[in-house]
Image 1 (spheres, rainbow, N blue to C red):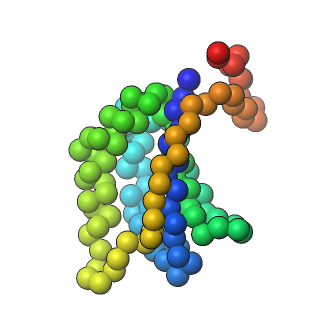
Image 2: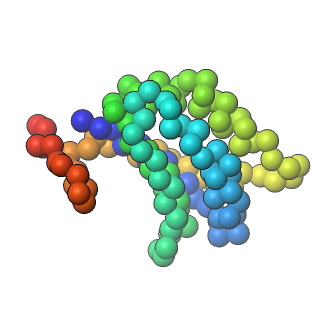
Length: 115
């Protein structure tokens, strides 16, 4: 059963393009992490200024191993290498965690729901 970690980033409107540029500069950095399955950066359309950083993993242990590992630290340290006076793009952050209970994808065979 997959594990989903969603980082909820509160981003002031004037910092949105900065956030997206910083993610674009690190695109693919997590792709080869053991257990990594999927990443999406979700831009708010209305009703919130929160961006969602959606990652899906084979297991919680795989996510924790990546989060606590050197590659995570290196990637986030690189994001702090910004011009003098340029602060963080997000003004707040929280993590939501889920196990995938059901899934559906167009054109993909679906496994039977696990219980």
